Image (cartoon, rainbow, N blue to C red; front, side):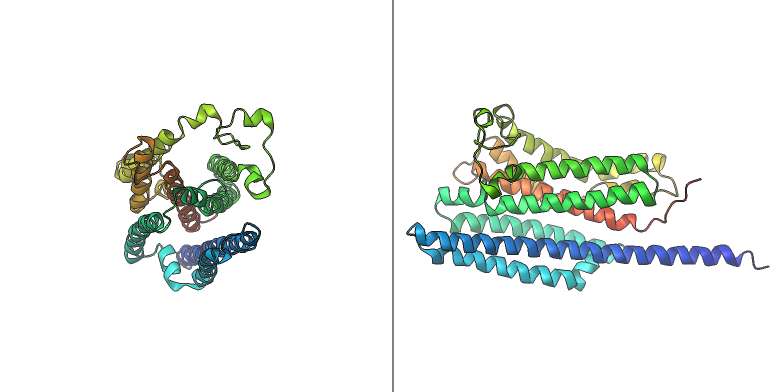
Length: 331
């Protein structure tokens, strides 16, 4: 007589476990986002202090670097807020359509804010050489790109471990392990494998082949000629894949199994399109040398940042959603 009660009780217990696991992951992702912003703010403050001290020896005005330090302090406070923000926690929730609508609106507004920052930044920094220094090698935006890539690599590694150990999806876990290594590689490339931080001189045999005289692979003369166009093509491909997500419906029905995570959680959601559109828009102008009076070659750094940001947020989303699936017990 009590047999029918046991499966129902077990199902309820499993549902509660999945709910608890998803909450734990949401809180972890929230801490990751907040800590990343704090680390970037601290980095900006340190850079500002170094430039402030260096300005005395260069007979420049040290006070021109103070606004940069103020921005760093504001980011530190923002990161602390994000770690406790109920708004961010609601954005990470997948339990209702209201949260999904909030995420869509947030991504759209976020893309608009980034484009506004680019415009204001261009108008406020009248000196083109200073603008390029701020965005180029060793600039603030490059540090932010590296931070985004390293954080994304860490999250990809968490997903890989989760798929491999908890869900017994070894192939998927291996793929995400490769993704983590690829993101780590790109992040190290952005920092020239530490040369940006430690300022060592480039070996002559590498410098002779490198367009920017750095210890990097992507700036080798063979790749340098195709970087801008390849960035546009990658951005455009990502935008098309995101906007065409409904076409995955047939494939989803064929491949989906009840005991495995839904196929859709491994793809970028449709509401990421504003960031990808902005990345493709900027990289198109850079690649084709259009509107050169307004869009400079260095503006590809903004496009790269938005592209990295999309992939990073997509990985955070995947990690949260994987918590809804129970641990698979191997036969």
